[in-house]
Figure 1 (tube, one colour):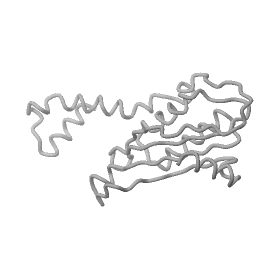
Figure 2: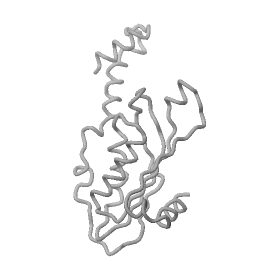
Figure 3: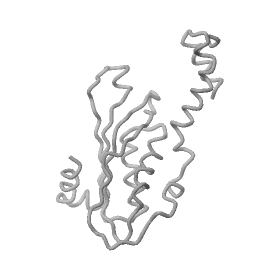
Length: 179
């Protein structure tokens, strides 16, 4: 990867031997590996058995989970937050694991629409919840730094499964609690 970054730097017209750029290919390669570390993880590794018996059948919400991802179309960042809710049916997921699931999928080349679905489907699969709701809102550098250059646009996506899709009252409760 380091060699490829060196070629990219040369291709934009820079001198790879300039003092400020000498170590840039290696730093850029390490940064890209960090930003895409989600490829080295699986849901099972992230959850690590943190599923616990519970009599709770009320909505559980983790909101404002910060996320950083990279648009698969331009390889530019999108930055935002996720709100994840589920209604347990006998077991609950360790609190930090929800944020870790978001991070695992976000740290891949991604589109926000798919990220939202991946998080929802994973939480559903792991918990066997009666329903799962995920909303992600993010600002995309591919819209802010290039193209239409719109600085204040925010993309919002949602994935509603089970009772969040089938029951308007459940969906409304979720939406009102994340406001």
